[in-house]
Amino acid sequence: MSKITLIGAGSTVFAQNILGDILSNPEFSHCTISLQDIDSDRLRTSEIVTRRICEALSLPDVTVEATLDRRAALKGAHFVFLMMQVGGYRPSTVIDFEIPTRFGLRQTIGDTLGIGGIFRALRTIPVIKSICDDIAELCPDALLLNYVNPMAMNCWAISTLAPQINMVGLCHSVQHTAQHLADCLEEKIEDIDYLSAGINHVAFFLKYAKRRANGSREDLYPRLQALAASGRVPDDDRVRFDMLQRFGYFVTESSEHFSEYVPWYIKSGHPQLLSELNIPLDEYPRRCETRMAGWHSLRKQLEGDTPIEVCRSDEYAAGILHSMVTGQSRVIYGNVRNNGLIKNLPDNCVVEVPCHVDRNGVQPIAVGEIPAELAAVIRMSINVQELTVLAALTGKKHYIYQSAMVDPHTAAELSPDQIVALVDEMIAAHGTQLPTFN
Image 1 (cartoon, rainbow, N blue to C red):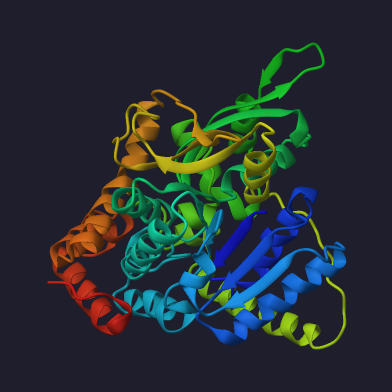
Image 2 (image 1 turned 180 degrees about the vertical axis):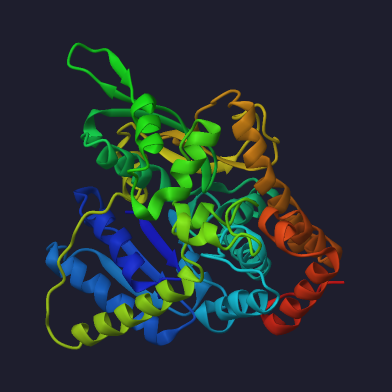
């Protein structure tokens, strides 16, 4: 009987999606679901949601437990999900946006790269380290499935701190974008074959093709290029189609995310780009407010006896667990240590590549070299990731300054002295949410 542990289970809506997927498989009709969070109110809400899912799916033999004790939740676990947000929306995310804005540095999402991504990693990696220590002691054979951003930095830290832990980082950007491109071309996703490779949020479709009835394949990139050249692209995706025209490949993460990973699109000296490319500044705080309102609405609904409708999502998690329990083979996209999987990226970085999954676990598939121009774009992010992870693991403040200085967007907007002042103010504002740096 599998024990499935969710760390940060107070992320109720996401927990609902993951557990709805997993528990829809009959192989998990006798499993134990262990929910852990540091917020008792949110934890209680997630427990109610989980029990309602079990009721909806007629699963009386699923054991549901909720605890504030992380070690109790981890003891004997077979699968461990990380889904927490260290520091929460308030104060941490608000700090990540308000202070840079005072320096003239604007962001859209701020959870993967840039100043926001750097500081989210700095406050998250110490927590991940303590979780890895517990896993090594309490459930050393468990598969760790990380959903916490910044994905690449957190997984890089895990692979460095605890290389013996079985770990995969999961995101939905590849499958969502594959569907999005099919929609743009008015094709059915089940007819599409694709290959993506890179790093989380900066991976590119190396192949995107349609299977014909005669068994041949039609390369769909000429049609995507024609769509980009026509200008008739979705209003909320102008950045990625611009990248397609300039670099020849389509990036997997959304336009609002990608715009802040590079130095070209959010520029105080060229404010017209924001309207021309429809770039939504401060998008993540708005999303957080919406999600919090949604959580309160859900909590109010749960005060009655309203049943929960279980809908399947396209997250990879349930498929991974199903394959490992049943042996059924499938391919997912996961974030793992490179170790030569992409030859022209550093071995110690974390890459997002196709992975074969069966009873033997998650097995990354080597891609080889990717086009040099794509590797060049990706390395801009890797430079920031490496220095941020070094800062988190060594406690050396100079690595924070340097990671911010090599960050593409930050460097394009601020001088070195401004960057140092910004970092110092961010450290002070986050206070005890961060470890001590020297």
